[in-house]
Image (cartoon, one colour):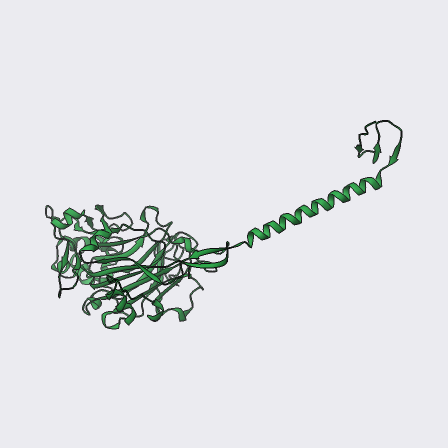
Length: 431
């Protein structure tokens, strides 16, 4: 007869359905629990071993750590093919006293042109003008937006002249503006009024700080400073508190809104008129997430590293010299990104180049009285620096025609070639 075992926890016994025998089942029950406990422990150990294997899994991957390869050579008339012309008002955040015009209008107004010098590739000129229908309206100007997007690269801007002067606010920068600041912003060159010192600024979402991550020996420059921040309760400017602007978050406490982390060149003749008077120079930015940094340099015309000079000179040739930033000397700006830093590399992503020439606005306008006190007094608007700047622009001063223009030799963009790294852990961030 088939026997069916029924386990009763109440009397700790095993009962047979034929009622022939009843026995104490303590030893049987203990054996049952012991066997199941061993099985459970064995299963847990197997699961843990599997997790460890997954976590420590290593695979062969390609990472961008090889030598640089040219991606774009923007010279001469080919320069314009790399960009789209933005048409419309300046952004609300910048609020410049200017209207950007499309390509056809820019050509008609003479805002863009190619300049031939010494039978070399044409130089690119971009400038601004008054509105021909209303001379008191915001100036007509140009904003170019790159067609290609980048997640890394070496960006070189060689120029003969940059816009400068009171009320002038030019920039050469990287951004993904529709989702700003999610994918970051890198200002490679930004001129404000008559300032003469180059700066590189990063603007990001939260959790991107350079504090205690940058050794002094890694760069020649210093951090900008934040002071005079209005008290959040009283609104009174606090000039007793002063801190380095080393937090890239646009809304960082104890810094001006959107000040970002700002590296300052050690040279006070690295921007604006002082560069123009010396026949210009080169601004270089190396954005290298695979190696964990963003660096920037500025070189005056007489101080070019030979490797940099040769790389730009042969960029349009079949036999090119590869740029090697390791031979250029220390950068003035160094930002640490990636693992074991205060800023993950994914704060910078999907960005494109922007050239623009703005006027007055949130920065040059607010600083107009400080940087250009004589003009601010002459065009005073009840003590409002921004409005005084706008009033100065409406006078259409000849200085804007004489000094507020770009004259560009070329833009050169390189990216590192991919290299195979064997047995790289899948938990390592190699982006």
